Length: 168
Image 1 (cartoon, rainbow, N blue to C red):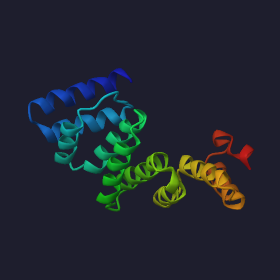
Image 2 (image 1 turned 135 degrees about the vertical axis):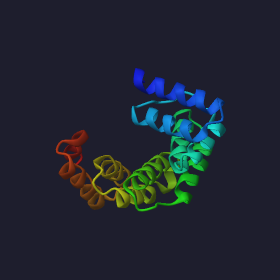
Image 3 (image 1 turned 60 degrees about the horizontal axis):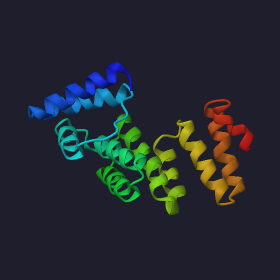
């Protein structure tokens, strides 16, 4: 965590304690954009703050990712599904958030990982990470041709992306 991200997060906590949820949500968002990776989140207040800032879908993704990092797949799946159920409003940030939710859900729900990653790539076709992850999932399911296509797309979007070409 950078100093900038920690300061923004701490200010968000302070504002949340003062019941200034909209301002707190914006500070939390600033912290996340600056790379803040929370170890533990008082997630009810966190969700409240983001809801006031009109970014509830992002809060569900962040809280879901936090649960995922803690190994709590059930809670992660619930939070990420909530983010997905909020849908997309056609702006790029919502598409990014929803793509991230689907990508993380592929880890929390491995039985449906390909479906989730296909959704992520549809929302953000220019994201090499999603193409690469899709390639890995398809490869693991022995769908060689489709895996090759996904790895090729990742490499075309960003040459030498995680050595995607070596998977081809």
